[in-house]
Image (cartoon, rainbow, N blue to C red):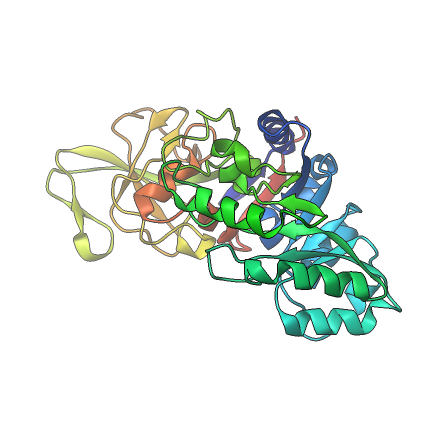
Length: 359
């Protein structure tokens, strides 16, 4: 056993998922959301596959610089503000496209625009109430961009709050607010996140911004990633370091929260919350060994967790258990643990060994 937890990254899967985006939203430009180091997958590891996107979207200047270091040169929307006040990385990058969502932010960009010309997006708050201007301010904002030397309007954005539920009326309401505010104004429109792409064709507008679906997670409450034709871009595995038989009624793990219902084999897997696996994943959370279900039993520890080997009787020390990937969808693990696949991907720690699948 040369390594503990291993996350194998599959660029071919991301390329496939990008083709699904283009099939669902034909003719639209695609800006791939790669914030949080490509949702924990690693921008550099996926650089070749991400080069097929028309543009990118990040949350910080550091993430923008990481893209450029990885050789990705597409137009890139900066979805958040420059929190440290240092605009040098922004001004040095002509393909960086700030998203303006506040007057103070607008003022800072306007002050440097004559020297550093910039394409900008404007965000409207259509009901999610995180960031953005009120829709009724759109006309005035357009006038200000037009009157500011060096600023060019790339377009308008908003963000959907409930698009993961195809029956929630909020999405229709948000699109109505957005369209009404911009009815007489020029500029490209961008509304759709992954859920919008998959379930709300009306949100496709001119440019879509896929995130979780690129990495093989489902953005919808009622459909799996497989239902949507998506493939996982990460497979997380770890080796068995012990296989033992315990008697009926014996406990496993801290707190003795789980007891064997019968005499049975139990395996110890070399991964825990110190590697980013969720500590709150309960007994019964799915895992797999060569396709055989090996669900968790007992509490997750810092360095290890335990699994039920009754359906994998030939398991041996050194065999690798899949925690999520092809056999065990990350969405399924996330539901069992009361979280979302986004968090599973982003919380993996430096103890995990990342590899890139060259296939």
